Structures are given as C-alpha cells and as structure tokens.
Amino acid sequence: MAAGTSFLRQCIATTTRTLVTAKLKHSGNHFTAFLLPLRTSSRRLTIRASSTNNEELAAKAAASDADSGAPTIFDKIIAKEIPSNIVYEDEKVLAFRDINPQAPVHILIIPKLRDGLTELGKAEARHGEILGQLLYAAKIVAEKEGIVEGFRVVINSGASACQSVYHLHLHVLGGRQLKWPPG
Image 1: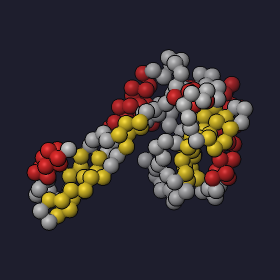
Image 2: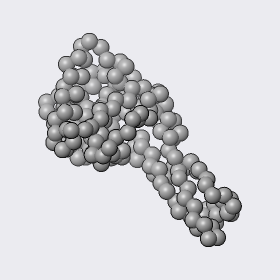
Image 3: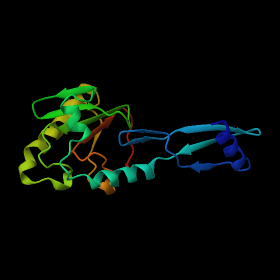
Image 4: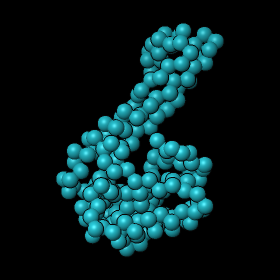
C-alpha cells in the first residue's frame, strides 16, 4: 500500500483533482466506492473511486445467466440458507434490508416464488396479483420503517438498468430527502 500511495502522490503532486476508478470491496454483485484523502506538499487532495463501470459490467454478466433457472441469492435468502435482516414477511412476499444501502432506509422486497418473473420486462398477465402484492408490501414496509410520508420504489429491469439479481425485486428507499431525477 505504501508504494501505491507514494506512486499516487507523485502522479497527482501538481493536480488539484483526480478521478480514479477502482474496485475496493466486492460483496456479491455490489461494489463499494470510497474516498482516499492524500496529502501532497501542503495540499490535501481527495480521490473519489467510482464503481459505475463495475456495476454495469456486473449487470451484464448477471444478465447472461438470467434465464438459466439457477437459484439466485434471493432464492437462498428465502430458503434461509443465507442470513438476512427481514423486516416483513407474508406467505408470498419477503422484505429485508439491502446489504449495500443507498439511503438510510433501503429495503428489498421479493416474491417468494420467482415463477419466471426474473425482471419486470418479463411480466405476464398471470403475474398481476403478485405485482400488486409487492407494491402493497412496499407501503407496509414504509409504514413499519416510519417513512410512509416520503419514500421511493425502484425496480431495475434488465442489464441497461443495472439489474444485478434476476429475481424481480423492488427497492424501497427513504429516510432522507430524495432528489429528482434519480439517475
């Protein structure tokens, strides 16, 4: 690390801002960005690492297996093979905290039975009931989390939307002022 830091200091000694893209931590299909403060001479510079390209690559890789029928991480959470922090559950829906939260409240809501519903773009008329139950569960979760006065429901559908798990899921985000447009 010392050699890498020294090299970076040399590269940015005369630069006031530098953007570096790097993968710091990979957890499942999530990448974590970080801030690295550096001191060069009397200046303090901050290098921000961005994971946008990594998320796009992970989404494209996940899309290649989307229709394989193989169990997803969500199937394993439903089967209790992988622990999760469950906040709501009924006979058809499971809601749990995201391991890489993008807001103070970030809950994922999934159908317990995938039934070909790997992404919203593949929904059929027969999925109408479960889609309604997922949205109603989002309202219940928002009430339980104390954010019913302001929250966002997001569904990423397909690789261009950076969907990384091909088991339909809703993100419930809140607990802070959300901005528009989102992305």
